[in-house]
Image (cartoon, rainbow, N blue to C red):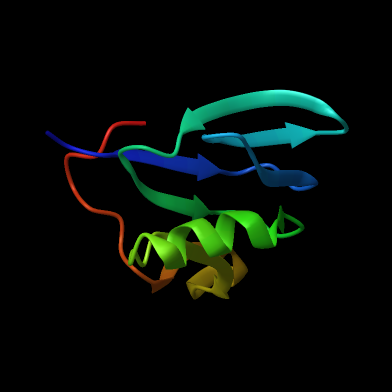
Length: 99
């Protein structure tokens, strides 16, 4: 059975823990919740995301490298336009994970 991947792409989001859930909220409103059980990866794909130490601790206690940060850089290309390139750091997204 494939695990769950939580992708957070909104600046200003807060990733926290409530009971046995990982909760993503923006301006106090819950926008997503996933159970800790089966959580394979939390991928942060935006700047300005806050991550609670409770989530970090849960991942560490489970012996999982489930936290990833994806950095986007706009690189100059021929003709003066920018090319969006993704550079994953830490664990890579695993194919077959559910979103």
